[in-house]
Length: 229
Image: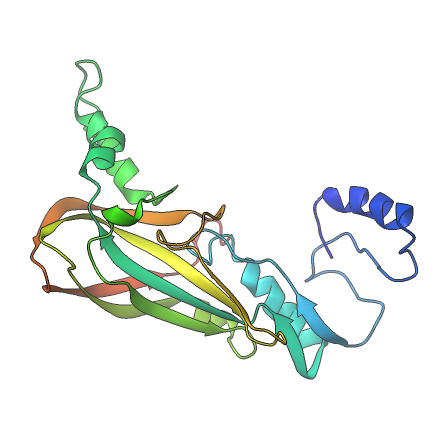
């Protein structure tokens, strides 16, 4: 099931390879279409977005699960964990945020405030991380509800060295625990590159930390009221 036009090309590929009697392709939104079967044994979906939940694609998987999955059916992937840590990022912050203080002689700090509100999706070098990673949310796709995907949770991590924290970094890991051989991957700075990269939330002011020092706070996430995706 796919609502994008790429499914039209997939239909040609399925036909060219002789799988028309094995694979059924349905164009549309999972919430709107009707499957040609009452129940399914397995749901496979690549629903992950930036900061895991951006675009709210998991909501669609949960609709499919509740409507079509047999009792004790399998979902791939079935587990996800979100992490938060602190990073030193003075050079990049100055380039992308501080730039607006003086744009070729013009003060454009109004744009700076807007830029600070927007998370940045980019690659962060592992050596920029200055704290432990705190798991802030564990999600079991077999049991999670849509309401569970809006949350406010405490976080706590410790500095790994004397340094400054300019931003918080959010990454996630994904698990396929129902496989014969469980599969796991991470989108953290220490892991192999993925197109999800990492999500960065800049602080207004840098925070000086000493090795072993604890930093704590509250992390809140929910759909945008104007555009829930």
